[in-house]
Image 1 (tube, rainbow, N blue to C red):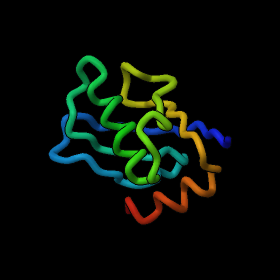
Image 2: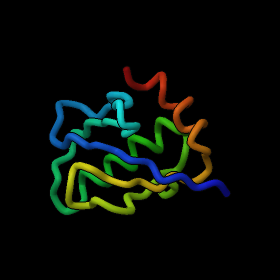
Image 3: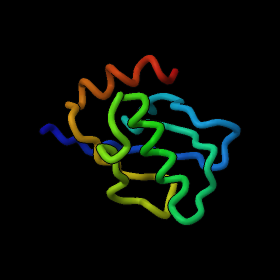
Amino acid sequence: MTTRLLRVRVQPRAARSEIIGWRADGTLSVRVAAPPVEGQANAAVAVLLAGALDLRPSAVRVERGARGRDKLVRVEGFTPEEIRRHLEGEGS
């Protein structure tokens, strides 16, 4: 199974959860409605990305950065190119 680590910049407590798009440094920017309390924002990131990639939420996991906005997220089942292709239409 292919596994990819993805750099993600998260804005918690947003009006709605959405994928914003790719930053110049290759980091994916997302907004989540959940607050950064007791892992709620991290869980929301996993659900958002899993939904966009048609994966089960357990296939997406925050590996590093659980307490910050910059996270390293493990995505199972996709190559880097497949992730980018799936998410291109989700953000700007």
